[in-house]
Length: 163
Image 1 (spheres, rainbow, N blue to C red):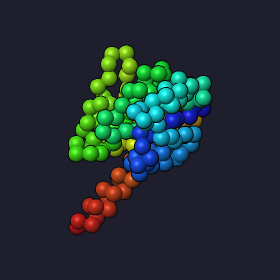
Image 2: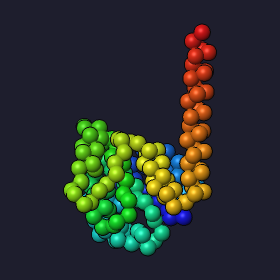
Image 3: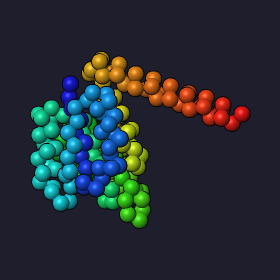
Image 4: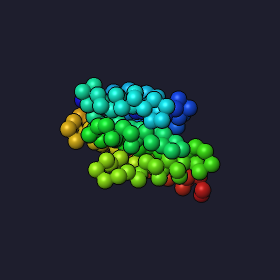
């Protein structure tokens, strides 16, 4: 199975991406986590992106705040699916990152999830990989079943507690 790269623009982003990494691990998807800044180490970003497919990656998740050019810089150098994860930071609380990530030029797409939505980025990456992996597909179905069961249980507990 192909693995997922989870890139962050800064080490300080790690607390906001941990839950996504945990989802990939729960789904038994190999994941490499890196700190690569589009602005501070552009050569390393380019090199990683150009070699990602041959290194066994199937999807790349890019988490960044503020100007958030990481996903676009990666997408410019690979044909692998790139998922942008805008992070809340600064006075605009992630709106700037969301707009920077989602507004890509024609021909260089970046799938974009919500601000700080690391779990959705991980699940989307898994769903992309599951297109060619029936075992992973079954694990995602079970993951979704467990999520459904948790909501039903929470509903029951709330209803019983309000009586």
